[in-house]
Length: 124
Image (cartoon, rainbow, N blue to C red; front, side, top):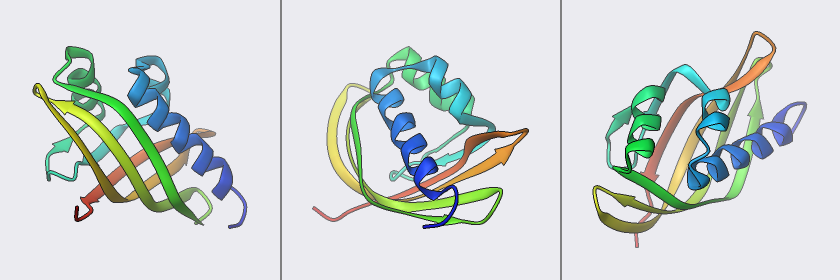
């Protein structure tokens, strides 16, 4: 893992913790304005719709824990792949599941931000 890989793994863990803590200020900084967030349910979110859903309580993350995360440093972009255990309440229904994810961060104006998330639910 060269260059920025470990820093982005750590930054993404901070992003996951911010989702579980409903830390909107951190998410506003870490998520790109043009974010494409593809949930394991195939629902798509933008930065605004993802944060709005969390603020309204429609989606409440209580736990997001990554593991087996690897980074590919491409210079001004870093691609992460790994597994995450997620506990979330979506529209009043509590769910707990694992996903395999691909996550992309890009360096823009000197700042790293998440631009893409794609996850696939792991079999139970």
